[in-house]
Image (cartoon, rainbow, N blue to C red; front, side, top):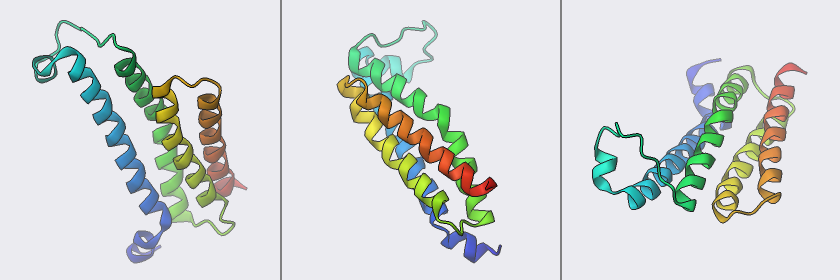
Length: 137
């Protein structure tokens, strides 16, 4: 595949948007932690291992960690599909499902909404499976 065709792949675009989502979640986590522990803590070396104890800062940290658990699989599958192609379209549908569910997951987690948050997580997993299936089936 030539560089122009790869650049035109919708998978490259969704990987870029997913990186924006990742940065948003890390920034939100940092912002809420800084609100609680102060700018000096944020700018410092954090040697004392203090962690935010507030509900929102904790939830933001856990939601960010959760995203980072599946993010490498998403990026790997999306880039593999960009190179290999996706004639069935299921890979791209899976990528959109993963992305939409990951967007939904954050406010659900921050709001403390149980079960529906778990459904969003399962939806993201289904999206990854669709991407995987488009590559191997």
